[in-house]
Image (cartoon, rainbow, N blue to C red; front, side, top):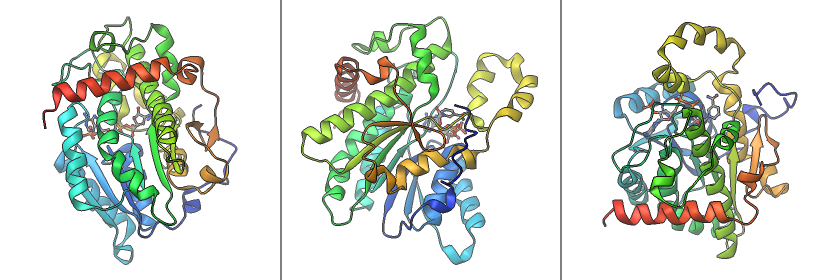
Amino acid sequence: MFGFSRRQQWTLSSIPDLSGRVAIVTGGNTGLGYITVRELARKGARVYMLSRTETRALAAIDKIKGELGPELTPQVEYINFNLLSLKSAKQAAETFLQKEKRLDILVNNAGIMATPYELGPDGIEIQASNGTGHFALTVSLLPLLKSTAAMPDSHVRIVNISSFGYLFSYGGKPDFSSVEGLNQKTWSTWVRYGRSKLMNILLTNELQKRLIESGTTNIYCLAVHPGVVATELTRGPLQTWPFLAPFEKFARLFFVTPEQGALTQLYAATSPEVEEKDLKAALLFPVAQVKAKASLAEDKDGRLGNEFWALCEALLRQKVSD
Ligand SMILES: NC(=O)c1ccc[n+]([C@@H]2O[C@H](COP(=O)([O-])OP(=O)(O)OC[C@H]3O[C@@H](n4cnc5c(N)ncnc54)[C@H](OP(=O)(O)O)[C@@H]3O)[C@@H](O)[C@H]2O)c1
């Protein structure tokens, strides 16, 4: 669970050559997303960093170029994207569609954790946007993902960064049938985080199911728990409980590095093993291990996943006028 794993054979150098492939990573300016962008670019992919803050994104791109060195000429571009706004997610997809004719790898990585209760610009609780924003981005890109999958020698992946924290959603009864259900105040902010990470898994399940039903069998959708990783994600808990600040430094001693944490999502996004082992709709824990889903995420009858999908579609129609 923490990300310290005995399976050390899959490392950053196991990532295959990605020349000619195009990738999107949301929230790529820091933490796990930053390493994901950097390592995909190192292997030759053209990578789009979808971030909410231009200055942070451009500084991160400069840093990546510096780290990779002049001989690699990494191709990394920024597109503005705010998870909290369904319109922004759709616009980010449209900007991308104007630039590219293929999309091989989509890593839905951006997120916040354990923030105080707040509604975003669409009237959606901000942690729930970890789920709804990525829905809007992904469905807007789905036609291109499908047409890329129809090209020769394609290896299309949709990777949703969840968390073992999806289990915190058991601290309440998830209701994704209405926006009121989505926005429910819970006894702990961790329950809302858990639900948002459950949404990431439900999106994975639903996407995989709907792709297969529509005849696309060679796109692999995966959900990933990266480990417990020393990133900026602790901004949320520190906002909720500022008195924890002195303990955070100590706690970080038990966290893995972003390089270690990003391994599982990079595996999901690039390893040929995903196809060899047919890891459709799999949940991966670190490093690159398939983990059985708990019943809420397994969602055997598909009810929760269907509800989540239908609600997101309705919200997208309401909040985004063409
Ligand atoms: N770190 C862990 O231990 C851990 C464990 C399990 C799961 N995860 C998951 O891993 C993913 C990456 O987190 P991280 O640990 O790398 O955290 P991080 O260092 O805080 O990075 C999060 C990224 O998401 C972006 N982001 C946040 N809100 C956004 C919004 N409204 N619109 C667009 N981008 C937004 C951030 O942008 P700014 O820089 O502009 O804020 C940042 O680029 C998250 O989905 C998280 O739930 C992390």
